[in-house]
Length: 581
Image (cartoon, rainbow, N blue to C red; front, side, top):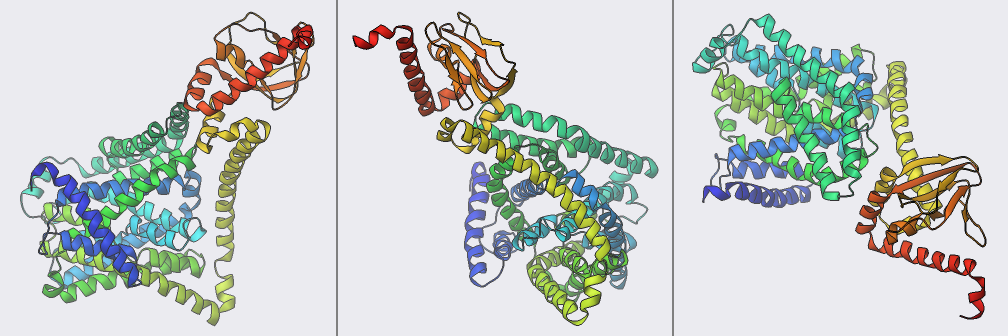
């Protein structure tokens, strides 16, 4: 096959295989992602038949991780992230340390060195945020307190892995690394303390910019683009912000693409247009997240199951039972409920993207043997496949706890859970209230001006952005005869009087004026004076022409109403003509 079409071939075959095997998995009552993993294995270099471009598939998978984490951020505010820090930060750090120690102990039994054991343990200690999100979405737990804690826990894990990826090359020689990768890292290294300080400074600087500066800049940019009325430009801008922040975070601050994208979503969630951004990016999230699972399958060498079956079983047991038990005990020790402990335990019973990155780095540095990477990949494939069963088991255990020890189950950790749930609930209520107010404004716009019911919801949102509020006191002249038309006025409250020669015309809420000069390009033909305290929504000349050009039916309706009004004004000025026409 010509290299020019390798990207097209990789994407096309990936989607075809994923659709077929995803459907077969669903028919067998398995999660579709199992089918995606099987599709990846069949497309990989370790099975006969079509072999996809692994490097391209890996980059496309990274796109899936970026877009998925961006979507999570859109529904996860910075306040929610801070609300769960009391359990997520100590819990994630303690779980990483204990799970890593278990991995080191396991590697000692196999005769590996301390460096290999450290990489192996770290790789098994960190779960996949992508897999977790899919599991939570299927069970409608993303917005629950338990789901928020689980996501926050994994975000802390991701931050810890960013630090680990920076420190491993600096520590490679000390940990007994072999080969040119270790020598290169040592030659270009700097003092360990300085490395840690710079890394923490970069991550801290990024977090500060994302949380404090981002919410001021990104919503303003989105509003600016939304005012253009271009659907494709808005979608493009959403993707540009998501990918731009993710890439910039990696290049400038050294954090991962996934974390950068997550914070991009958190920043964008502060905008009133976040729901529209989420809807526009959702199809791409779904498409590219499939490529993530396919790329995981492509890395897997099935022969490891025959070469090192006991090692694979041991790694899988550590992932599913060891990590889960550690997380469950930590949650209980922090005095949170049993149900939350079971949810977090099931969430961590798998490994994913950071595990692959750590394993690859370990092999490159000469710390981890090649079979170690294969064992980690086997553990990832199997744990991802089994994870739905683990969640089912957690639900069974939760019912069992509730049935056998009802009073303990109901009371243990209830106080801390209620405090956390109340805090998350207050944050969610503020967000819901903001969305409700936005929807109320939309409904009020239609109720007050039925004319705008002719355009779709996106166009109505655009109008809210285009309108400029203006007020007037009784007796104030709003429009002067002979002036150049500067805008169209919609009366939200109050009343005005159009001062015609013969008989003034009173206009009340729901009416509009000033459109004739804009449609004709001429001058104002009458004075308009406020006769009450008035609130207007003004569409200036440029925005009027731009909006009406995109909605010809609305322009026609406004033109017809303007023509009828002009005819009535003519009759008022010349009442004698009624008897001759």
